[in-house]
Structure formats: C-alpha cells, structure tokens
Image (cartoon, rainbow, N blue to C red; front, side):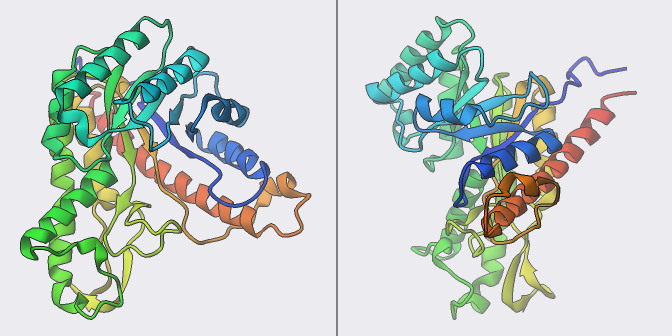
Length: 355
C-alpha cells in the first residue's frame, strides 16, 4: 500500500549529453547507445534552436517518454529582451518534444524589474500549448535564501521552476565558511602543492563539511512551494585537480581527492557530499515533494581515463586512433555509475513508502 503523501512514480533522471571530447558524431552515437543501456534521459547543451535540432537525432530512444531537456547558453540572460526571445524560440520550435529548459540565474533576480521580466516570459509560455517548463538554475552565487525568496515571489507562475545545482550551492558555501576562518582568503585558490596546506587542511575539510546542510535547507525551503524542482547533481572539492576543465566541482560522487600528506589517518579527502550525501539530498527531496515533481540531471564532467569500446567498437570502425572514443566511453561509464547511485537512493525511500 502506498503512502497518500507521495507518488511512487520514479523521478525523471537524466545526464549531461554533450560531445566534450574531440571527435566526429560517432561520439554522440556512442553516448546515445550508453544512455539507452543505462536508461538515462538526455540534457543537451545548445546555444540555438538549430543546434538543438541537429543534436535531436542523437537523443536516447529506449522509450518514447524518455525525458529530454536543454541547458541554454550560460550567457543567456532572461532579464534582457533578446534572452527572453531566445527562450521563446526554443519553446516554440520544440513544444511537445522538449520537457524542460534550463537557464542560469542572475544577481539581478532580487530586483523588482527582473521579477517583472520573468512574469512576462512566464505568461508567454503559458499561452503556448505544450510549452516546456523553464528551470532557473542556481549559478550566480546569491545567498540561497535570496534564491528561494525569488521563487516565493513568483510561485504562481506555472511554467517557471527552480533548479538547484548542488555543486554550485556547495562550493559557494565552502568558500564562505573558509573565509570566516581565514578572512580575505579564497579556499579555491589553494592547490595540492601549496606550502600552507598542512596548516589549513583541517579548516578546509570543516568548510567542505558545511555544504550538505545548506543544500538540504534550500531543498526544504523550495519544497514548501510545491513546484516542480529540478536538480543538477555533481560533487566537488576546492582542491579537486582532476577536472579537464579546471573546475572545483562537476566531479563524480564516487571520487575522493588524493593529497600528498596524511590527514585524519588518510591520504585522500572526502568531497562535499559523496554517496551518503547524495542519498540524503535525494531522500530530503522525496520528503519535500512527491517523486513526480522531481527531476535529476547528472552534470558530472569528464576526467582523464580510457575504457575499451567493446560492443560499441563498430561505431568508430573508420577511426585509426580510437583513444578519444575510449576517453568518451570512460566518461559515459562514470555517468552510468553515478546513475546507479541515484537509482539506489531513489529505490530505498520509495520502498519505505510501502507497508
């Protein structure tokens, strides 16, 4: 028997679908295959509707209802008329096909005129049959309470919802926590070769440990609005040095951070969340909202590694050097491993709803 407070429908689970490694469209075919094998929906990154149309052919096809969303260009600003027009262009061209659109927030979203601009955009989307929902992602570094307040002020807008990027919230929290102990210092400027590291490593880890509670608090605040809630899921650590893009976040929940010294009887550091933190994030989300109001995109980005192509070798039969395809295959395997973590975290709370 199911609890009346929650649907046992599984939330939408997607992953970043993008060719971040050099090569031809065989890499997108490889991604399509691995996403289908994992049962993942796709969140494309596209700057224009034409770009998304070209990528559309590579969407996972394991089932007709598989969700597809698009992460709009990070520079798109819905505060500007041209930004709102581009959102509407995507919505018009992909209505009935695209489930959601993601756009970064802006520091200006605390202003009244930004709220008015969002309302104008929301009304246009609501007038459009089968328009995709616009998720506004936490990215600009606002106080989490200010981010939640914006959605409180716009809670009646049916096509506008929040996107919590847990890594962005977490890294901001870590930086602020560390700066309280070390005024004027940015923890993200430290590196593994820093001579100060042995002296400050305990403070670094204390700051890292503060991230999860802030994320859980933001989930609770936004959950009270009873609006659909999207997540970008990835881990992070200010000393993370394995990102191909040089980022402190967008790391796997299964990674730890190797260090050239011993701390707490180990030579590797725990990240902001890890598998146990991911479990708590998902559990808190299910407590705050029904599963049918939740969606998750794994935004883990590539790190160095290679895995033989195996059953997908035919896709790059025309390549002389398959190194980059093996790198892509490794990244896709990391996404699949993290998807298994999400699936396991979802199944435990859902089983607990039955009695």
